Image (tube, rainbow, N blue to C red; front, top):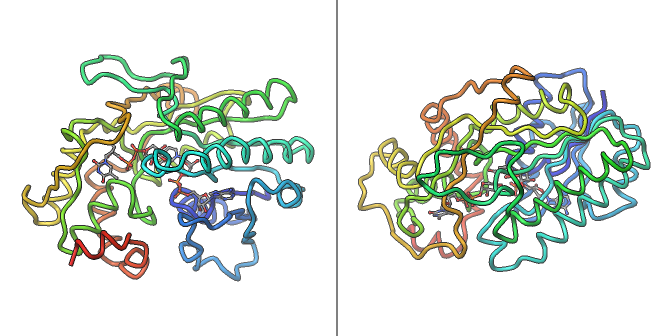
Length: 330
Ligand code: NAD
Ligand code: TDX
């Protein structure tokens, strides 16, 4: 099979390319990535020169490049996106450009090339925010209610994918997962930011009251879910992906502090994020019951593996720290 992975040099994308090459060594994998600040070609360095691996430094917004990349593909896995909420608050337009317009350009290339299977990787944030005391969780039938520029742009992309399925018959699937963590995650997101700050002797910035809740999943469990859904999911269907690890940010940071042998004085309580979603929680019964997926890595085990990886790969992350973070940390 020939598989195209957009955003393959990003966090989830690079884990997915490694996962796919190991699980399906007979497949050839083409990575399409614009190498924004978040795209790190070095995350895929071990695959360079391999006969079944190809890297294309192009944008999903480039129609001609997409037409060429997806020609003859059996499966397109779409992960390319602007992905960080704090950046979206400061500069929202690139999120619309890539996540909405770029997805439309890619879908159109896939339609014209008769790509037999298209999987879109999306987020729980499209469903909005739950109250801390709400007994409910998001399900595939929860109405869309995104609250920020990032989540609104991802919601837009999900709607476009459904439209290309309903209108043109493209065989699409969509997955909406909770917060991922693991190796190769850019040190702007909470877990790698906390780990790398602590490794450099600094403090962890915690927004607001620290009680916001996220539903965490170890990235390789998400990759296994993408594999299952993209190959065996029902065309036109959406699947929520959750390992059922609902934790407050304070609890996540406390566990990182414990594993890093640091005390709570290493928490830097800072101003809250604008429009900060309170809680995400997902019901993934459809994925578990229809497709037989279950997560394999507990939160604590995943966290240990992640801390070990960052401890051993400073050369990957140290050049990526914001200058302010580096000077604070010294
Ligand atoms: P990331 O920011 O680490 O990686 C995004 C990748 O997309 C980078 O390699 C970047 O260079 C590339 N890219 C950006 N704009 C591009 C363009 N115009 N053309 C081609 N490539 C481009 O993001 P991530 O955390 O790996 O997320 C991957 C996908 O999964 C995104 O669609 C995101 O919305 C979704 N997602 C992420 C999470 C999470 O917790 N990280 C959770 C749910 C869903
Ligand atoms: O320094 C920080 N301090 C802090 O308290 C950072 C960076 C974050 N936070 C809080 C904000 C959130 O409540 O931690 C939580 C997690 O923040 P992020 O890591 O920025 O992730 P989030 O905003 O929840 O979005 C993530 O999950 C859904 C990904 O970035 C998205 O791409 C994905 O769709």
